[in-house]
Image (cartoon, rainbow, N blue to C red; front, side):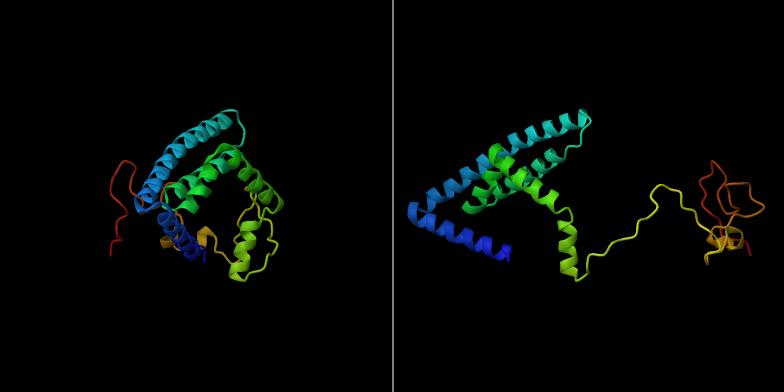
Length: 188
């Protein structure tokens, strides 16, 4: 819907401005707007990058700087897109005071609703939000051969079981250290 409404609104505004000031001046204004947008994108992007690096160097998580950087990229893309409406939104995202307001608004939304992205996914796919079981993330889990999985000694050699005659850590088919040959086919 957004990809249909925005271009139609942009065309309408461009036609209205073109009728009011003429075609040449309209194109000139759009061109100047894009150049100004590119200059602002470069300067604001560089400043955001410096703040990002300074925050990392201080040992802090640069969450705000990442959000500002994303808004700068979106603002720059909107300014480079031909049209007056996208240029206004892009300009607002590149000017520091209005971008700070957008960062505050997005931070408030994301902290109030941390699962916004997951909820959107659940609604679109028809899946409900279910609690997930916690998993062992500290590496203390072990596999047990009793649970339907054969132990290595019962596994055929083709599946990676160690050969009893091979030195530890090397199977019979593995190339000798320093050789470039891959596994050789079995002799018949």
